[in-house]
Image (cartoon, rainbow, N blue to C red; front, side, top):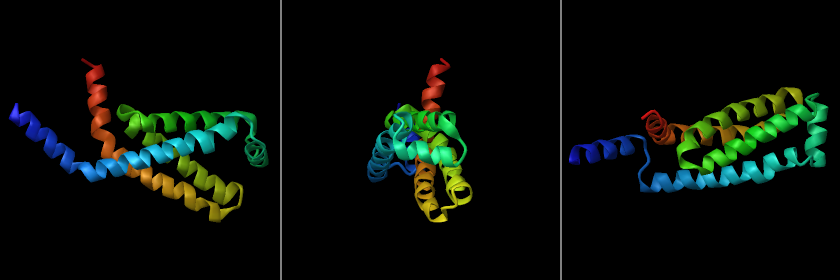
Length: 143
């Protein structure tokens, strides 16, 4: 039994998820998760005027607005659920790359690229640090 405990501790330390890092990760996950749910997904899903206008300007329309809103909602919820945090963070990285490209080249607002790049970088950290928990969850499903 001590071998298992030692291996788990070594894996945890290798992943950089000591007590302080774990608290920092949870803080980032909660703040970004709530931001995605409340400030990003909700306006898109509830048809807030600015969200509708932006997606109309870029030619995406309601379908793309709803799709992005649903993905942001799923990502935000996933960040708050430990077994799904790494997968959610990975999906959010993809969304943030798309957001940065859209801001820079479609909406021609390169200064707006900073926010998605910061969120994307933080999500890379979460995805890497939380990968072991997601892998363990998936392995448990296969039993």
